[in-house]
Length: 378
Image (tube, rainbow, N blue to C red; front, side, top):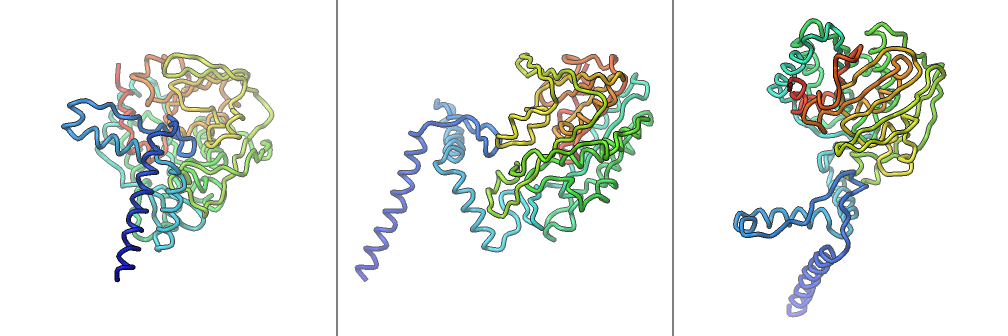
């Protein structure tokens, strides 16, 4: 009996000793501001003041800081995932496991926010003389809803898209890609470990948009498909760090015809960088290989080509990054703006200077993003 008590006391001491050692190491060791694995900035060390202490803000922020900088954090994430999967869980940290794919768990659409976005888009369309189009793209949890666990909520993106399209002004052209993507669901149109669509999925949507505005899309047999990397582990993998992941392939599509002349990026701080390609190949050797398509998100990207056509403005989320290169075959100027990084659109572009305007969002972002309301800001 005494031996058992001694062993139990030693185990408890070892456990708490290990926790103290790891916590101390977490505080002492150098800290990274950005997690490449999780593709996000980590919590900053909180400042201590009377207000923060008595309000409880400091302890909460310190907890976030220690959790996000904890020694061997990625190993703990992987261990947690393994244990939960062994316990029979099909969902870990907001990610569903099914049929060799990872799916982002989400909630049904917020229609009140969608209504505000629709109101802003209708106001924005006034005076554009019918040159505005909109494309809302379903995400993989909707296209593969039948492969998700039975208890997972239906994202309801088909209903959301229909609702939004029916609520828009008649002079706004709606481009519905849902059915085309659904019919191609057995093809490689969404990444397995990331929340984006693949270049193949974007190509399908490009064809639909080109036809909707009177252009003949570049035929697939005229496109060279380069399988640039086969080891992409995306944003969903980063949430679970699971050995069940099957790495994704990043494909780069190129064709004859018009050539890109320049790519000009304007960051939030006003700094400008210029490139001669829409493909930022240095990211093929980094964690987030989706950044191969136009690099990191910024307020403004301007692409010029020798297509000899008009100009296109794309108001977008990151789904547009691998979509936009296709349009350089038809438009001599393609500009992308991301409302998340600006106060109002007019600070960056004069919409009247463009021949056509496209709003392109995935359905999940459209349902959640309050920034679309900025379209009505003067």
